[in-house]
Length: 241
Image 1 (tube, rainbow, N blue to C red):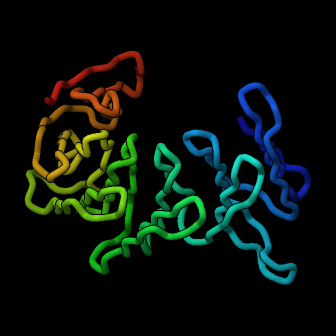
Image 2 (tube, rainbow, N blue to C red; image 1 turned 135 degrees about the horizontal axis):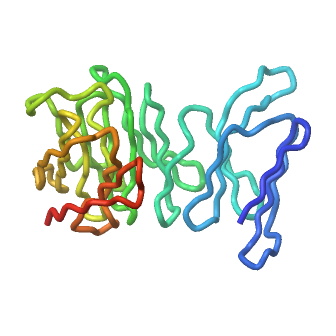
Image 3 (cartoon, one colour; image 1 turned 60 degrees about the vertical axis):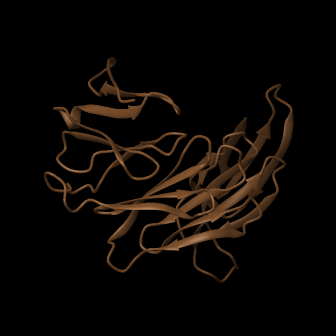
C-alpha cells in the first residue's frame, strides 16, 4: 500500500504493509510527479519526476525506481515508465524512437533492442503474465516475440495479408502465458492469433471493431473475450483451441 502526496514543490511517498504499518518513505523537494506505478508484488515504486539534477541545471524529466523501504535505487531519463515482470526480476522500458530495454532491479540493462532504421517507432512492448514472453510491435506492420532474455523467437511482417494494415498499426491486444499473441493485423474487423512459432491459429472477422474490447479471457485461456464498450455487461466468447 502506498500514499503519495505533493506539498508545495516536493513529493512524499509512504509505504505501508497490509496491516497499515509504515515500511518506509521517500521524500524529495523541488520536484513534481507526472505518473507512477507500483510493481506487481508491491516491492517497488516507479514514478516520473520533474526535477533539477543540480541547482543550476534546467528542470529535467526522469523515471525514479524506489524500493518499499523508501530507498531510491536508480533513475533513468530516456523512455517510459516500465512494465514489470510478475516476479519483479526485470522490467521493460520503451523509448519509441530509440529502443526497448530490459532492466533488473539494480538498474543494470539486461538487454536492449534498437529501433531498425526502416521502422517508424516501437509502438508497444508487453510482457506475458508469467514473464516468460515479451511481444514487441514495430509500427506499422511488424510483430516480434521474444523470450525474457531478449532472444527473438520470431518476427512477423504483415505485408501480404487481406486488407491493409490500418493507421494504428498491427494493434496487439494481448499475449498469454504460452506466447500466443492476439492482434488486429488488417481490416479493423479481423481478429488473428499467432502461436509462439508465428503460426496462425485463428483468423476471424467480426463487425463493430470501434465498439468492442477484445482480450484473452485469462492468461492461459482457450477463449477470447469480446466486451461491448457501450455496455460492459455484454460479453461474447470465441473458443479458439
